[in-house]
Length: 128
Image (tube, rainbow, N blue to C red; front, side, top):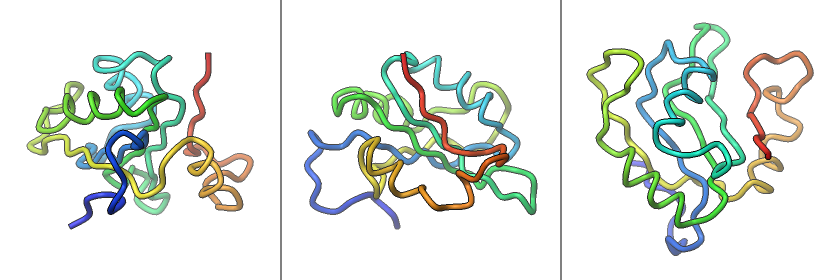
């Protein structure tokens, strides 16, 4: 099973993979969900992966916190929770993401179809 980047010390982890996202959640719903647990100033990247053929998300998302302490706290808070906006038998599962940090996440998606102009479900960069 996926558990994130091997050998990376927790004090360097800022990007989390959030699993078991309800399939009918949109980016807006995920933003609202995250507001209950973390301030928008405390993260700078959010990407809800999308399956265009099914017209729904793929069940997981990535969030990059502005520091490792916030990421660890958010992961601990989210793990095992139920989703607030809809009834779902699935609990939130949070693990360290393979790609870490805002810059590496941006580099990872550059040139990808998810950042093409007009694509409605691109990664979101949040800033003050």
